[in-house]
Length: 342
Ligand SMILES: [Mn+2]
Image (cartoon, rainbow, N blue to C red):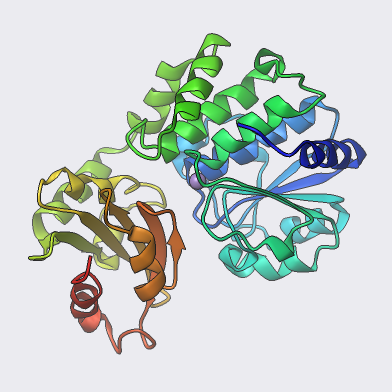
């Protein structure tokens, strides 16, 4: 992967000048948000900086094994700690999201922070005007992959991946593995090359897979089974969707991240070309996840119908009660309409 030399030098200079950089990622952080943020934090720590990771929401339990996860300041838990970090911060590194509004409640505080902002992201349509420096590539698997190649290109790293802290390398491989659903989607030659270099440097991939995919509660699998059995609907046009009711969420005691990956399962059906999940949250917002096979644009449907977007084959958004539909009872009909033109 090639970067403009002036951008790399600018980044190097900004990192060098910074004493208290903050690293920000998106709400309901996933493996790529956590992996890229914590990787960058451990790199900066080893460089003698005092980095602070800021997250809008807590990490799901299967990501707390990453080094530094416990030191992240979480806006929904401790707003004051996040605001305080932003007051003293002299550089703001924004990872795995493309525009400040994506940060929801944390967005205004980040916008007010006077420190220069750097974007490192792989989503479509970056909000370039909000950043002093932009690294945006959509032909990569993940923000973690992009960060890997940026770190490798920094003069201070000198292309020597093995020189990065072990925690940084583990977090990078974790983020990429999670965003590709273990090499199932959005994989490029550069993705395999990254994995190869990291594994050769000693990163324990088996341990990452155990942590990411084989350490859940029984109730998560039972909940997934019930959703697939009772809620999955497949339209004549080849769209599969299901609604995750709040009642089910509460009954199984689920937490954010527990149903990560469930939306991919209906794509295993031959005739299904797009899969969508709708998670009801208490505030009258349904969180939408869309996954599609090649030739169908999850991104277009997310943008046209669900106030969202992301990648061609993997996008997110929301559905608002009182705005998109009058009440909960109208959600399924709206979804059928949205998904009838793939
Ligand atoms: Mn990502």
